[in-house]
Length: 188
Image (cartoon, rainbow, N blue to C red; front, side, top):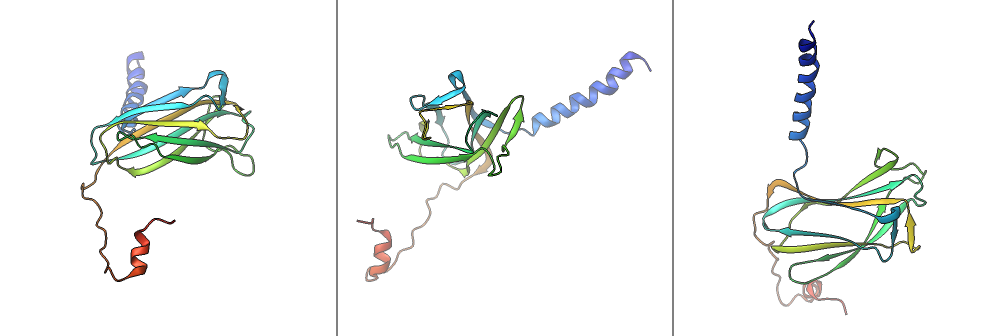
């Protein structure tokens, strides 16, 4: 068999497989990775992800990835997450990300000497406002500086799904029903 025939025989299947795999990949409309200086995450090092939403009917999947080394001394990592909406609202949420099982075995994928743990922040999400958003993450551990955190990545995958744009219907209940009225009143 000639050299050209052998190359075609091995090269063609490799190229076809690569094309097939790339066509099945995620459709990220936003994907950003922040490398942490000195592979340490301190309280003062917030990580910002700025993105724009132009379509409020599309459905998205939101992912977060934490890349860490074997020297990371904890089973998990707590982050304080702030989301700034186009209207100015900035709610906060505490997020616990498990990086290892209770036995100490790391979760996620091994890449070189590091581990990458991918977390589904939200699947089937939609944004009710068009405009600019900022997701800010702060490490929220008991130590000011946590070692062996290499990077934080945030990605938004655009799905083929779309919501109908209608707001969910609120069931109307009779005014005389005090129990039903209390359900919709804030706690004091």
